[in-house]
Length: 163
Image 1 (cartoon, rainbow, N blue to C red):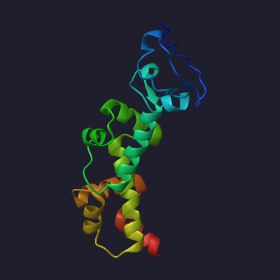
Image 2: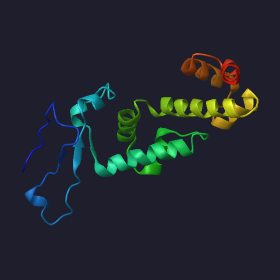
Image 3: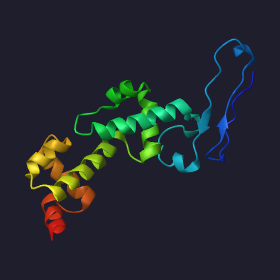
């Protein structure tokens, strides 16, 4: 039986298919892509040498991102999203971090703030209504996150954009 060998420096586009003699009558194993050294910087705290994504896993991570973008106004937990795209929670979280650079929670914050910026620029909606519309439970939490990510409160952002 062949054994997998993990190499520190592998090209990003390297795909490896393992062939095991005892699997001759079974379905072939899916090809796996090794993570690049750039991908590894997003996976702190995990054993980087053991995280591999099949092509199907990568497609499911893209589906998770698309789902998040479409449903960002709703509460999305890692567990619910993993069920939606049929991927384990740890693999989903590692894949999102690899692909977006953020955890699911932080990525949702980014998407919601970008959406709120569009509403601030294009509408005269009150800030409370915008906060609720983009998926924040409270106006105060929306203000905190907006200020942290945009370096100014939402009201000032609206004022600056309009001038």
